[in-house]
Image (tube, rainbow, N blue to C red):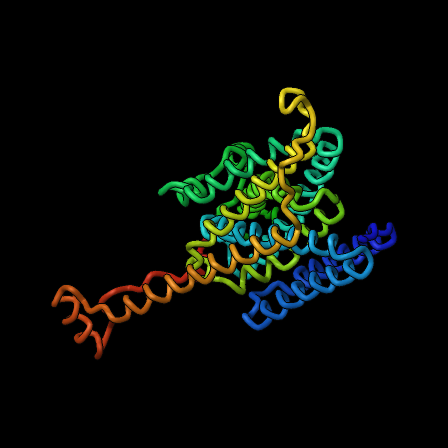
Length: 367
C-alpha cells in the first residue's frame, strides 16, 4: 500500500532545489560564456540523474505510485519544455541576442516560468479540490491544444516571430537603445538613461512562458493531483533547459516530428482527464450527478509508457528522415551545367557564392 509524502520530505526537497537554482544562477552571473558541448552534456546528465534519484527517494518514502506520477509528470513537462526551446531559438534570432549572453536570458526565462507555473499550480490545485467538473474543461482544452500543436498551419513560424501586443506596448512606452550593452537592461546613451533591447527579449520570453504554462499545467494535473509533485516535476523539467538549449543547438531543426509526439501526449492526457471527470462526475445534467462507474481509469504506468513511446518514436522518426534527406542532398549533382562549372572554377580561388551565416553568427549581430 502506498504511503503519503511526509512534510519534512516536501520542505527539504523544495529547499534543496531552491539552493541548486540559486547556485546555478550565481555561476552564470559570475562567468558569462558560451558553454561547450561537453559542459552542456554534463549538466544535462547531472539534472536528469538528479531527477531519477529524486524519484527513487520518493519510491522508498512514499511508494511506487507517487514515484511513477512524478516520473510521468516530469517527462511530460520535459517534452513540453523542449517544445519551448523552438520558440526560444526564434526569439534569440529575432532580437539578435549575442550568444555570449544567451545563458542569462534563458535563466531569467526559467525563473519567470517557475514563478508563473507556481501561481498556476496553486490556482489549479484549489480549483480541482473544489470543482471536480473542471477536469472536463481541462480535457477539452488539451485535446484542442493537441490539434493546434499537430496542425499549426504553414505560417506558424511567422506567427511566432510576430511581436505580440505586450512587446509592441513596451516599445511604444519606453526608450530603447539601438544596441545591447552586455546583459544589462539599462544603459546610458549620450548622457541619457535608456533600456537596452534586452528588456524586449525578457518581455518576449515572459509572455512565451505564460502561454506555455497555460498549456502545460492542465497536462500534468491529468497525471497527478498532488501540487507538490506537479511543482517539483516542473522544477526538474526547467532546471536543465538552459544547458539543453546549447546542447541541442541546430539539432532542434532536425526534430521535425517532435510536435506530433507532443500533440499525441496532450491528446492522450486530455482523454484521460475526460475519463477521470466521468469517474468522479458531479454535474447534475450528466448521469444524474452520479459518477459514471463504467468509465475506466488510466493507470500511471500506462501514462508513463505512452509518454516515453511517443517521444522516442517522434525523435527517432525525425532523425531518420533528416539523415535520409542529408544523404540525398549529398548525392545530388548540380542540375545546371553552369553550377558545376562554377564549382570547378572555384577550386583555385574565391568562392562564387557566399555562405549564409550560421545561427551563432546571426546571434552576434546587432538588432
